[in-house]
Image (cartoon, rainbow over all chains, first blue to last red; front, top):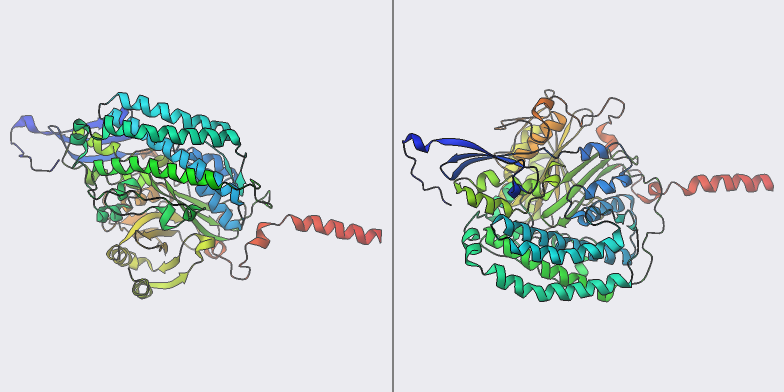
Length: 375
Length: 182
């Protein structure tokens, strides 16, 4: 992947521009990348964004803040509940609403199920990018169980709008508890199989090790967070660094690797699923009884003038909502900082001089969700 | 990172450093900058190991405000730095210090028309090329607020009386009724 290639004066070795996307399968959405190639090496890369821009920030300035909740789910369709969490938390902080304990437990469990679901999809789709067709079938088989569990409580399978300001829309029942416990056992029993089948595979190792290396300094310059950052050895996870909700009450580890290459972030994501299972398990054991909605949530939620920030750990890294209020119930300005946006911006530096096939490995390791970049 | 040392550096570079209540606002410090100090500030933050979380603009009077958000990997220290653009709606780029700012600045140029002087490639990013003059997040005259109107209001710091305005109108008619009855 290094840049030691001899540039020949021969006319057969001139540079040319290749358009990858916007409909390329390995960009996982409508992302276009202009590649300036020299033979099979990508010398310059220029991502072109905006094909999926839906003006979410503009929409937010035209309606009461509470009714923006469904929009959050449509930014990151794989981490919808965590986007719900960030936004609910933002308004609760701003308006001083206390959330009942049971709600926090339900939110944590639903969010962590959502995180596993996102990682499973990444696992299957990434390996598909790398030419392994079978793993996606296994991953989707497991993922289906989560979708069924969440469908029962939230009513939808992908773009959840389950959290409300001050609570959740529907209480969980015994079926949720039993099926979640069954799922935890099932997924745990599948991990050794995944490891045997995939993680030790020679082809996978050759495609991932030493490809797309990052350092903590590069991450700071680009604002890279999430599993990519943890792959460089920095144990930075907002669930631990700025504990929101009730994450400080759970015992879980933050998996890290040191090398910062694609293999490192691959392993970090893989191990994170186990940690999410641990959190869900502890939450199920301690699940308290109680109301699922805060006592007094005004119909018209006026947000005191000022600015508010709410940051949560989404499956791909740090998600921040920044809200500026002029005292009315409609946000004056809402900015959503999405993790994939910053993570993708490193691609021109990370992939410079790479083989084209390694560019696919490196971009896949970002776990891109394009709608959250374009918003 | 030594927070006291960092704070001293902020004070040298900025016009005001304010401690913020994390429990309510979700960040720790607010730093107001003169626009010519933005690059020095960014360089100093990178030296101290801060990463760039976000960069955005807020349309207020007297001028558009550019907000830089920084945080730290090791300790909780979330900082909002603010600077106003000049009459030409211009401010210096920090994209050579924090490369992650490159796209944020292009996006801010799309949405608010802020020109980042020294940016290597200030072309539309999120919007289409033909919408280069659209600037969709600029406020219309009627909705535009003064910068003081979107700052925390010191006289009424408790958010709760503001958060529940409903009980008041209910209470009043009842009181009136009981007076009439008596």
